[in-house]
Amino acid sequence: MPGIESAAVRPVPLHSLRVAVRDALLVLVACAAVGAATNALRPGGIAFVQRSEYEILVPCPEGSGDAHAIQADDPTVWDTRTLLVDARSAVEHQRWHPTGAIAVPFDYLEPTSPEQVRRIASSGAGRVVVFGDGNNPDSGEQLAREIAGKGIRNVRFVEGGAPLLEKAAAVRGAR
Amino acid sequence: MRALFNWRGHAIFALAARLYLAAIFLFACWHKILEPAAFALDIATYQILPLGLVNPLAIVLPWVELAAGLMLLSGFRTRAAALLVAGMMVMFTVAISIAVAKGLDMSCGCFASQGSAEDPISWRTILRDASWLFLAAYVFIFDRRPLGLDRLYRRRKSAATQEPS
Image 1 (tube, rainbow over the protein chains, first blue to last red):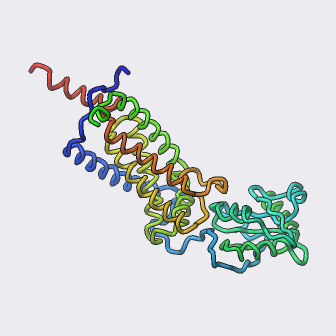
Image 2 (image 1 turned 180 degrees about the vertical axis):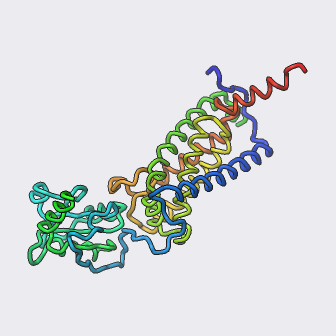
Image 3 (image 1 turned 180 degrees about the horizontal axis):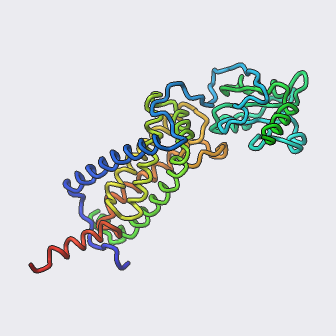
């Protein structure tokens, strides 16, 4: 291939190795400076040192947790780091669901499949907010407690379920 | 052995490997630069680093990936770039191996931070990263006088030294 050095390859000389290491270190330092400066100047920058623990969603073998209620108009419900989980039937999910919500229909007799739990766990979200039919008992609350018991951390359920969530979504949309 | 080492085809393969790695790293750094918070969460999910180191790594690492990708693409300080890539791949491989050994059910966070239930970490992820580490080493050893800025610079330098005074 013309243009490409075709001379026989010789072992890497020690001097070249030193130069490569030096250059790599210089690039590292420059990148640290650029990264820190960019982060400091940008609107969505993060704190250089995180103070509070990250809310991570990784199933723990021995873990179990309670699911707490949350109001439909709570801002965290609509936060981009929230994974919304719809516990209603597929038909109801099709009729209306908030953008980004995933359907995990809750069955009072059958446990939620490991695949569904894994899907939630590996979503990368900071919290899980489950909403159901809003009845008594509420399928959202039931599902939230079930998946919390399977090791998913930071699980909430919407008090009043989908009906109130739909109203809250309409109010947000009207603003 | 010596014949294998001196094979002329290495130059072409090393160039291909260099451009492949450049594409991977340029693609990988993009969402991390745009969404440092999401990347920090990805790092925290590994549960390896102390909390105080999570954000600094999330802030700096994407820029190192960008720099390494650009250097590989342009042929500027190629061996330093290959060294950086190799260093990062060692770090990633170790981190993913620990996470797999712990049985953590998560995505690697290597690329876009989507809901990645379809791409959880596994031994295949480790194998993939190990193959990229091998490619970085290959570029480091065999991409001598590569096409790109380094070659241009050398030619100019040698032309300048040969000019009669």
